[in-house]
Length: 103
Image (cartoon, rainbow, N blue to C red; front, side, top):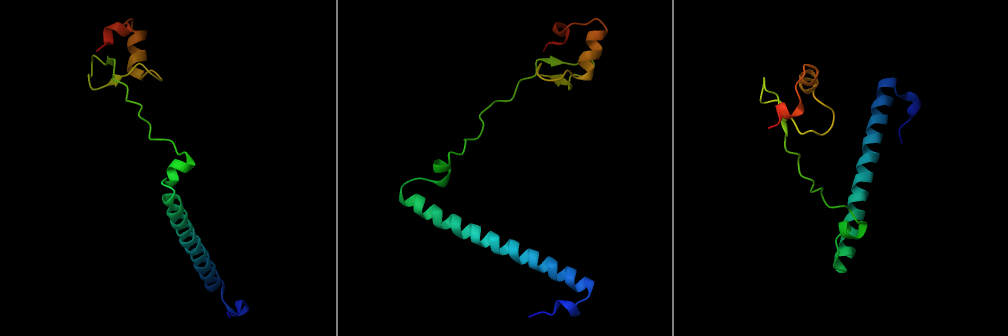
């Protein structure tokens, strides 16, 4: 057993850090063991853990296609969704319409 009264502040801080690390490591090992045991039981019944927990499938939402391009710099595009880019606002303020910038 360690006599905490004889340790310096640096030694106590190191001990505290080491204990925290050991506790975290122990919890991780226990969690992995429990998950492996649960997975084995679930598989015996023909399921996966994800199926039982009802985790959602990955989103299949497609990316939006750009509808507008900056005439001065065609690399700058906008889908028409969300906040208007600065170049769109400036073009609209100068009298252009969205149709003028449509791709």
